[in-house]
Length: 333
Ligand code: TRP
Image 1 (cartoon, protein in one colour):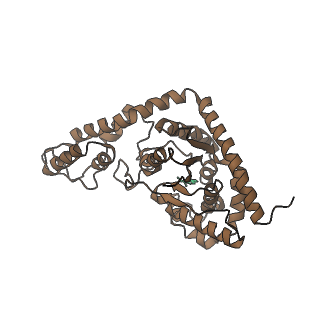
Image 2 (tube, rainbow, N blue to C red):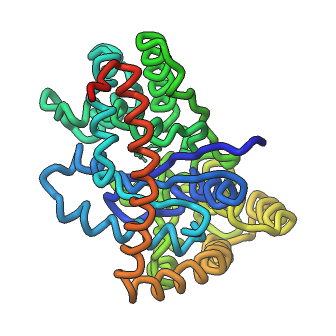
Image 3 (spheres, rainbow, N blue to C red):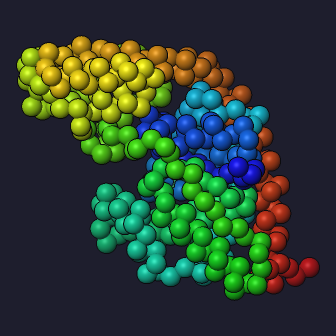
């Protein structure tokens, strides 16, 4: 693969969980070696549905940064920055808003879904409604060519490319480039309750920073098969969260296969099975948790990394904005 410019990021509305890991963090860790990767902490986007809770966003900027570093995002390879400190993103957003219709925004499936989920009803904040345009600005401000995100973000990439094409067409330029999505190889991770999606708002997530005790509690109450009442009963593997997680996190595929067959035959109890999953997840999370605890002792060091990443991004953003403005004939002096 040629060297890509990568832009990706997360809203700082809570710490990151295993769903984030499977959906995109794993990809980002792998991609950072051979490509130029920018990772944005999307505080402006977080405010579009948390405008009344700035303290929540502020606190979670550090939490998300801790998660990135603990999981293996290397600040010497990836540039981590804070969205609100790049004013060029806001400038681009205003220019792009002219290239998008209200109807097109209303049809964006991700936004539609979220409007429903968050119960906005008739009172949708305009900033929230148009955040896909702001996301197009995030992506194009560094001229990204690749965005590693979960599948729920695919409509954002589509809309970004429509804006890129419209911009280049109307202003007879090629300053902006189209972008591809880097989707995870692993299917979306379900929640511990068996619901399709792991998410903070559904309260069914395992966080990267969970303590051993928290992890154990969550695994022990995980959804398995509601028809599996006695140990000797045959149990279902499909839709059983424990097996979903084993498929993703247990390297010993032969062992998982054996457990599946045993469970289906009957004679394998949920408690034994869950204890095994706990071991697997705990082995994965322990080094991350330990690094996170160490890093959390020195928040100034972590903020310094964000400051340096932001300064680096500003240089690139300024250059893009200059080119964009001159394509739009806004280069007055
Ligand atoms: N919308 C993303 C989310 O909710 C976060 C995000 C903001 C993002 N800007 C981005 C992701 C740009 C990728 C590229 O998770």
